[in-house]
Length: 251
Image 1 (cartoon, rainbow, N blue to C red):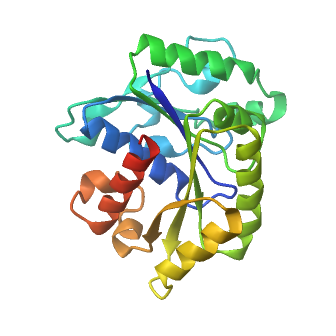
Image 2 (cartoon, rainbow, N blue to C red; image 1 turned 180 degrees about the horizontal axis):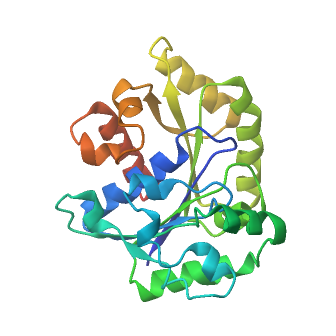
């Protein structure tokens, strides 16, 4: 039975897509067949991490949602793009990066109900072990759907006052939707912070476990989304933290 993991944040810039890409890569390195769906149709970006350019996108999630293709047609095998010996598979369903198609989404919208059917078709037809959904920041209809059908939810936040309130709303809604497993991930934490105190503080605020605290890293910033961190720096302490998170989400 495939597991569905949603990776969400209330605000942009938290490292949500980087977390999604690293989780997918870790599972694929363990031999799993992994699907990754970029449902952030208004500001897509995870394709960059998988070295997928526009020329390789015969179709996108947008095309599926507008009835132009099946969702399988939009799936791209990006395993070889990572240039590593990966025993599993990674299939990416990107959102369109064309300005006109993004504008059309904003102007016309789409049938959100198609997403659930699409997710199930991906799992069935690609024989997936794992489906990772990179959600749109904030709370909209497609994000609520993604959270509702998830087996596990990772909520990415920074130790920033603007993140605290929005994360509280997300946690409350996820509980009402009955998500079986939910963890907070505190990302981009300055080295000056006491991580133990921060973990205790956040768990007390939200009554929710913090799966891991990821400190600010110059290596992450220098990589600048030109690759997937756990693939480029497999022995780095931050890669170990991502692996810890991956294990907890499927425990």
